[in-house]
Length: 126
Image (cartoon, rainbow, N blue to C red):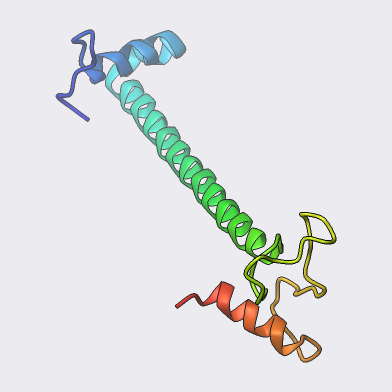
C-alpha cells in the first residue's frame, strides 16, 4: 500500500496518520508512527473481512440461483422433465407438480425409480 496515492494526491500513509491523530490525539503525540500503523492494520483487516463477506454473499446468490434453476426443472409446465408428450398435458392448469418429494439428503429406498432418475439427471448432468 505504500507509495500509492488516492485521487487527491495524498499518500495513504498520511491519511492513516491523520485518522490516527483525529481518533487518538494523546497517543498520536507520543507515538505517531505506531498509531498510524495500527490504524492501517485495522483498516486493512476490515477491508479483508468486507471482501470475505462480499464473496460469501455472491456465493449464496449463485447457489440460490442454481437451486432455483433445478427447482424450476422439477416443476412440470407442459413438456417438462419426464413428459413424453410433445404438446404437454395442460388440463390441470399451467402449474403442475411432480407427485413425489425428494429430501435434501437425496433419494432413499422408498423413492421411485423415475424420481431417482430425475434426481441423477439434475445433480449429475452429462
